[in-house]
Length: 338
Length: 110
Image 1: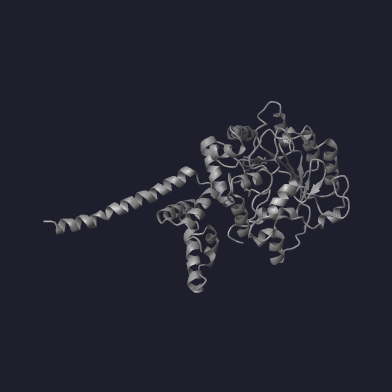
Image 2: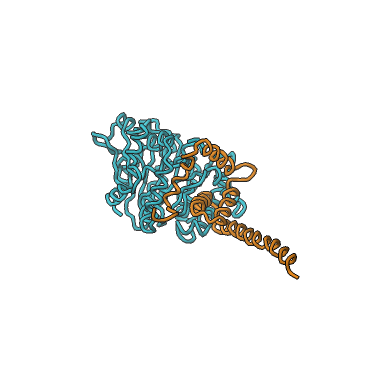
């Protein structure tokens, strides 16, 4: 679905209040940025997988790949401004030909460096040299593993993907990733395989840890539980299966004002493959660009205005503030303390 | 009211103390304490709740606890096994009450 069609569809959320009205009722409107702690760089929509929940609608047919000039501008921004975390996502970042070079350059800046990988490529000889690049630059690897149950996981990500991820985790474990004291971080991202909200992060982490160790002998550092946001292919899924209305109501009923205060968009700046800037990766896919009255891209920006910007919101934002809150770094509030 | 059970009424559950707030508050304190992890894990308690919900034919509870099971990563097989425990107990409870019937028959028959 085109971005405009998606936002049009998201305007209709039945009897629930719009997200902006909900914020107004709680004295939380407008939402504004606090700082820029994370530069999240979406290096392209090209991917070897075609996952059913992908908000990017990434796949092998996509041609949007971040060019070298945009990477260079990202490095310029990072060199000029003390942004502590560099978070690389896609698509499959490995399929961007400039990734290894960029990681080596970004590594010199000594910031926290994250790559979100689907882990199905690094066991392929064509990509396996990236593991050394990861180790060399102390890259934190985040991988999506929707469920510890193979069938369930594969229903979302594609047949055989679960086993490929386990194989890659074993390879990364052999390099020290996920092992205590190695300093090499391997994190798992859990998201529901269907139209329901994720459970408590700590409970799921315990379950994953026990089952992955018992069944496969693999280890990891942390599990991050993420709510599926009604954008892209996941929005299609909700509409096609008749789950949209219930899901939006469930999100709206689970609205947590405390999670609004800790929403990731307050501290994140998202860069698109072409250098356009957004409040988050979801807004990027909906083409909801940052709302600033001066030119705004990685090529031309006013950092003061970016830090003090008003966040662009729409009804998909309910997803990040439902329950204990959801972000690319997992839940944002402590369970049971709304 | 077109139907005795309306799906949207599940969202009304927090309001059941409306006409008796003091008792309602006590109930919710108890409900929260009883269903929160203690000596049993949250997963175990949720599976018990699902089994009870199905034996008592409560559509609201079945909806809520099926979703909670899914959120906790409880597998379909685990959910179904818990329901079989409930079903077996219901069958056993029914058959155990045949004792009363058999005792009466034996007393009354010549």
